[in-house]
Image (cartoon, rainbow, N blue to C red; front, side, top):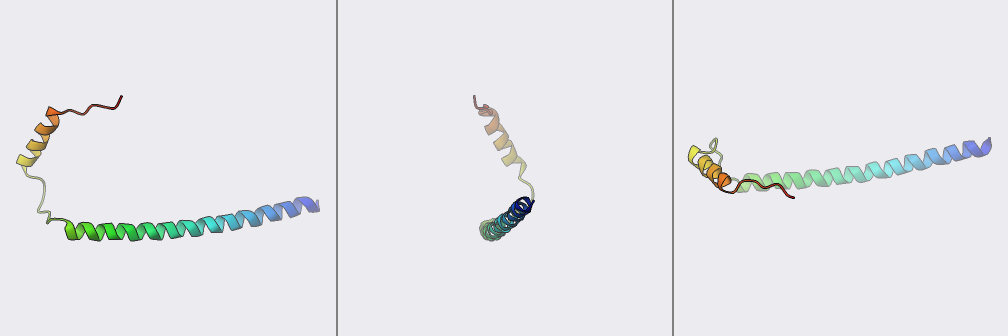
Length: 76
């Protein structure tokens, strides 16, 4: 009976340690991801032209005719 309790205790301790290590790595990755997203947002906002509204009708028609000339072909 003592062996079973000892094994359960070891299993519980190992599971807790592995969980803490995993959560620590996950938190570090999330912080790094947040920093990268902030940098991307700052780059886009500084490089982005002023968006005055929706795309003009002439540009939309140009893209539509361009698409109709070369329709989408799904990969085989």
